[in-house]
Image (cartoon, rainbow, N blue to C red; front, side, top):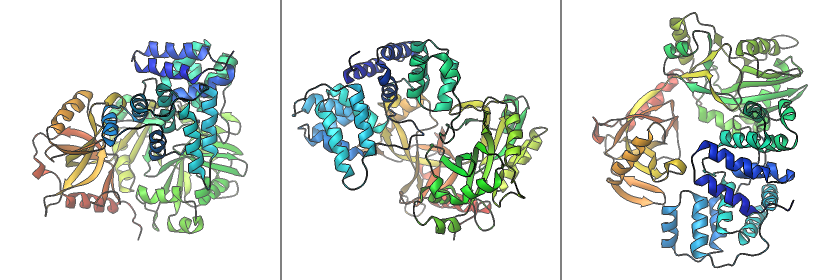
Length: 567
């Protein structure tokens, strides 16, 4: 068959934009996939979802909006006012590019028309560009595409550059389309995707090799799986009720999620985002080599930064270790880590994700055993208990809090490990605090929240000057109805606009839940909330009754009753 033009993909994404019906979305995708050549299937699926490379793939395009914007500006003739008008109308950057090219393009579209594979291979070239002059090479490659792209095709290209397709067809719907196109059961396609972590590979195998090949999907060492995610429970009674009392509790450690792959002495460590962070964590690699008796293993765990007494340090101290590429030896001493593992996905040639949690824990106990003696310092199993009742469970949660951790995880004993899925088998119960803060600005939303002010800038009051200082942002906590009502309310309080940010009079007070206060160079207050979400709108409070900066500072200091602090 002839090569598929990019226009076919642009036409598909346009159809996806026009409906929210799940069956229609999956049907459009299935029909498109069946029209492709075999070598086009995987790239096409990745471009549909706006993820050029699988999450575990280390490659990235690394192009800034400024570089893209400058490239577009070289093709158009538009005034600053015209730019501002387009950005006000556009749902996202991709649509803004489409509108600008439709209304102000000065450079004619070049021939020949783009093909789907040509665009994908150009993205691979962009990702491979590194070192001196790489920015110019990347921009040149992108400009080469945009010179031959129609406005609709340019929209698809730019949306993929930033990984934000926003057309309503998420991973689950694309999987439905793949299953329908290949005639395979949806659960089989889902499981293969959980293991491989690449919709493109799932689609290619499903359509060219069929159901048997998908069923044979197995864990591959040094290809990380997406971590299993937890739903939220508000209190211990809820956790016991949802798991019918058949649960284990573990400390919810205040650290960074890691996935460890071991094959003999070869060890690789991956972050929650599936990035290889092995080079930054030589001490953790050593722990695994000395503390895991299994020849091959894939372990799930948490790395925690600690002070000299072993108390957990704030999360931002831990991130200094994960982002460090130089002077690693000094940083190992400055910010020591502990590693606690709480699950095993693969052990000595056998995948375990389909086994019950209790069986996996028993396998983990066998795996985490130093061959020649005690476990290395700072390494071991997560603290765990099998509570007889809610009272015992609550006492364990208080023990976790006193040890400086976030809370506890409640895990159903019979639950499978579901990579990338926020299932009911795991529940998190976190220690949180609340603050009453004023909204002083908000950002226009994207996708489903287009047309609403949805990312709120939250501020505390300076008791001496009466000024409000931002201590965080959040778009979490409100319903669609509340977002719409809040938009009207804030626009009536508008004092100015800059880009997509609307500043407002500080008259709306909201109660905000958060898990931690950390230092921040980004805000004039010097502080930032972590995991903030709105609990309710405080109609009973005026801005003068909002919490003060001193209160936020006190919350920050109180954390160190349980946490460690770097000098």
